[in-house]
Structures are given as structure tokens and as C-alpha cells.
Image 1 (spheres, rainbow, N blue to C red):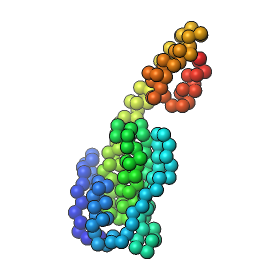
Image 2: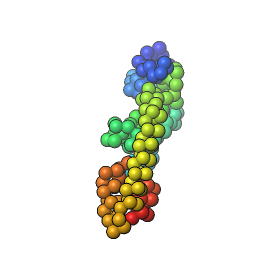
Image 3: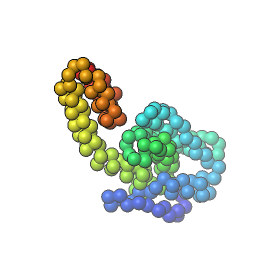
Image 4: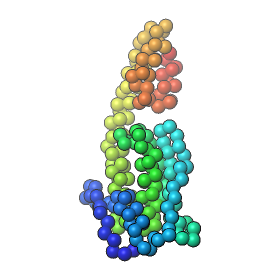
Length: 175
């Protein structure tokens, strides 16, 4: 590759190239002329998706692929844009596997930043969810039997979005 100068983002003392920088290089450098970049949505569920990005040369041969998975609940931006973020991550990985912007890592700045945020927020969120779940069980169990269906509905209206399907099923057993 030419002497292309990538802008980087410093995360915990290490420089990472952002996806947009890899895309700019791919679209502007002559060695990638007539290459194609395709994305494919492999899985789309209410709270999760998987995308594959594929890079082909002018003859149509696959030169690199990248996969990504995103959860809707993993960040504030993913609440509305988890599919778009997933596609961007897959593109960044495919371009990295092609050799673009990998001086320090295949991972992009966006991926590393998201991974750090997940590590920081997951334990606290899990403890908060477990605490709410435990309180919900106690609340339903301590409610008079004829009023438990209303207690169950009240718990779901307040905490339902934070409980997994298994947790909701477990709460139903107390109704």
C-alpha cells in the first residue's frame, strides 16, 4: 500500500484506525480500483443482528471478509442503530483483513471502544437486573394469591424490558 496516512484514535495508549479512514483509503487508493465491497445481513432478530462484508477484486474473486454481531441493548446508539453499527463493524473488519489500516490492530477504534464500554457496563447492568428480578419475585410472592396476576403485570410494566424471556417465564411461575 502507498504511504497513506491514517487518522487514528488513541484508546488506552494504543492507536486504532477508524472505519471511515479504512473506507476512504479503499475508495481513493488506485490499488483498489474496480474492487467491490458488499454487505449481507445474515441474521436479524429483534435485539441482535449479524452482518458479513465481502471484498472482491475486479475479476470477482473474494479477497477478504469480515463478520460482526451487534446487540440492540449493548449501547445507547444501538437502541436505534444496531443494524447500521453492525454493518460498519463488518466493513471495518473486512477492510482490515484486506490489509487496510492494520498497523496496530485488525480491530477498529469503534470496535475497541464498544468492547471497553461493554466490559465496564455489563457487570453493573447484570447486578441491577438481578436485583430488580429478585425484588420482583419477592413482590409477587408476598402478594395475596388472587392479586398476583396484577402484581405480575405491574412488575412487567415497570421492569419488563430489562428481563430476559427466561426471567419473565420464571416470574409467571409465581402467579
